[in-house]
Image (cartoon, rainbow, N blue to C red; front, side, top):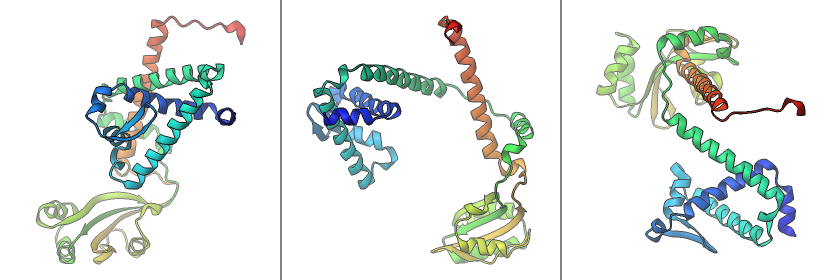
Length: 284
């Protein structure tokens, strides 16, 4: 009865998430030959979680001990609930069967769309990007003040001082290009836009607030043992629209998303014809 009470509290979305997780586990359980040569991390009944499966689930977090322990704990918990649910006959209820069918279709569609778009490259050319930017200027309006800066950071204060000295006899781009080889640059950027809230810390904010456009900062320690030089290029106010060069990465990302959506809609239209969709309007 306790399991049934828990079941009734689940929303449709929670059930889909749970079923998706369990389906992924079921798929991995089919690889018995592989598991025979893999280290088993935990076993609940007939279900096992191996080291390679755990690494695949965690991805870049696989080396984090806390993430691994939390995932294993949740895996065990879900297996226990799953086994008890089966024992209580949950799988025979109409609600379960309906939700499982919906979940299976949603999961299959998601995998298919992911595989479908993996083989498609969205064509991005300068003219298309520029046209998209010009037609959607309001999308790129700033919701807070921003600054355009040049900056370079170094592990060695002497490199930072040398870099700043060279700037007075040349321009930022030319010196920076040489610096990539001659000096040990930690990070660098030319004409980079930062929203005020994106600036790394108060020290950087104070330095920039005391610069005029075109002015170069003193060498300062932006972080422990990181020595930086900043040049203020431009100040942008809230509600202004930055030049495309300042937001080009965002423009390309949004254009690509729009193109993918267009390709998706065209593909779905083809499927309408392929599978003879019929809609009974009398029921509306």
